[in-house]
Amino acid sequence: MKCFLAKQFNLLDFAFSSLWRRRLKNGAVLLVFAGVIFLVASFHLATTALTATAERLLASAPDIVIQNMAAGRQESVPLAYEQELGGLFGIKKVVPRIWGYYFDEIRGANFTVLGVDPARMPLGEHLGQTLAVGVFPGAGVSGEGAAAGNAQVGTATGDGAAEPVDQVAAGVAPAVLGSLVSASLEVGKGDYFSLFRPDLSLKTFAVSGLFRADGDLLSGDLIALHLDEARDLFQIPSHLATDLCVYVYNPAEINNMARRIAEALPDTRVLTREQIQRTYQAVFGWRSGFAAVLLLAALAAFVILAWDKASGLSPEERREVAILKIVGWETPDVLALRCWEALLVAGFAFLLGVIGAWIHVVYFDAGLFRPVMVGWSVIHPGFALVPRIEAQDVLLLFSLTVLPYLAATVIPTWRCASVPAEDAL
Image (cartoon, rainbow, N blue to C red; front, top):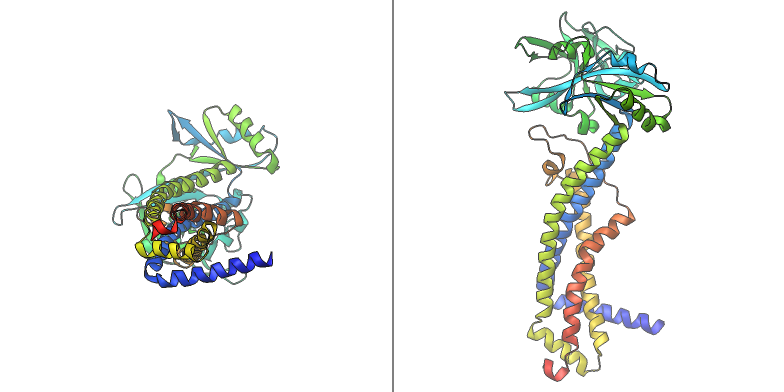
């Protein structure tokens, strides 16, 4: 055993010296290989980080969402469905919600407008925890229900409470903005802005708060209003809502309750929180998978290049192999030497690529691939990505990048090492 280890250490030392003699060539191969690994690892880490962020942010989403469907398209749902669901045992609350998209022609951006009544939501008193500053419309200063239209504009204190600073003017509705909407409209807490109703009349809002930046994946393009103000902005009749949010007592019965709701309301589409989370995973997975296919094509081209280089050894390398065999080296020894050389190049390239991908995702928020992964056209969320690297991720990246390179370099080397010394000379 000691002899074997000593032999391998000697081969490793010789491999280092051999690589150093051809440092320009090997350095170029190492940098190109590290670049390919960097691209593949960046996509993988960004995907896992986006999926984890979506799971964390959707943890407080409604248990079940009910949407009315007509001719395969979503339409407003009648509020009378609340009474029909009242007879289903196990439902904690049914909360109507109004939401839609508002296109800003000046900036060419789509804003998401969401209207809810915090007083009717099970966790409505905790909505203030999602804000960086201010209060949520209809939640009041202390998180209790306040009348829409005369809510106070406040500033969040360190303990989560809010201190009122002024009253919203009569006829002006309070609104909470995502950080990207605030930057796009160039308004801050206490400022005013206006949006057009469908009949082109203006509705004025006062910024009563701003969402935290770490939730920009969901709230970056969001304008949150009280339910009545959103209804007035979109001019939706009082007996309709965009959808219904259902909260159940027993989380283990969510799927069973969704099935019962679908049977009671056959013209609706019933979505559970788990299904919405899977949708996010599918979207991020599809985008990253599409890009990964393109990057694997680049990896395949690099492997083909490595194969070509290894199978066409230079006269100097052939002469080195012949000399080694003349002085007593056997074919397995030469093959072990080339394996160590390939492993050293691949190992250093793998470390450089993975570390570079980690820095790219954590400190630069995957800036090279962020538009492809997130998909916003004008408003790009600015949330921070925190990837999780597990053993299975490292093994997957290693198998996709290093093993093909080792196979592409070792097999041609074995063919050359099998040639008799006199023929190699």
